[in-house]
Image 1 (cartoon, one colour):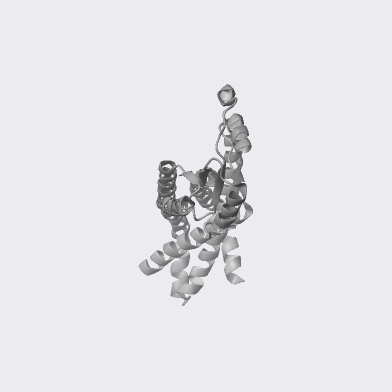
Image 2: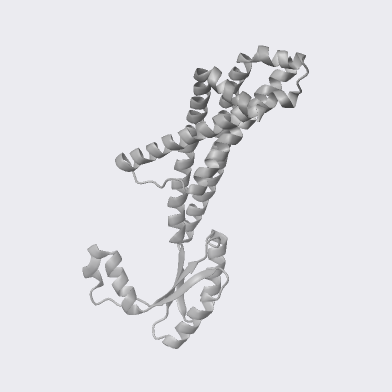
Length: 281
């Protein structure tokens, strides 16, 4: 309770420095939040492309429908398969006309082969798994050809890996910069009370007793900075939606994690700054 009172007194005693600290934390986390927003939307765009990964097996002309339906049921039972659906010749022609409307005349009177369209489960859409499933499907003798866009899937998978690695590296870099900036800001607050800390040491105050108000202060500043950063990121998202491109904002869970991240950075920055000062006095 005493530590809470001391932290509150510090806020009241130096409101300008406290506001500077909160603002610095907010803008550091705002930069991190913008990066997170970009990473989130890139990931969602890649997930939408990932949903389009499918295998299409073309059925030989004259194959009995019972045989095709039986194979479709077997394929749907594969552990990697989300769904398998038989597409008749009429459905294939209607789909071609719909997807390639500008070439409708080309398809007049055309006969397209029936097929089995196979969608894979999330986590089973990497090139190796898709190729393995396609090879199993190809084993059915009445299937003329099995296609799945091998080159396109390989490029998509590489892009996902690059995006994930870049996201982790840049995220850690932003986090490290945020900790350094916030730690320097909190150190200013510590130095402003250097004389008070020295007196407390002289009268026998323990390091943990001296640290506690600063840790609480850092925690409070981290939460306040996180809230302000979240507000700024939300405003930026609205502006991007309005003038550039539609984006998705963080869900409640991610926003809460962002606030916890701000609080953690405030605590870490305070702990480092106070610990360094206590070792020097």
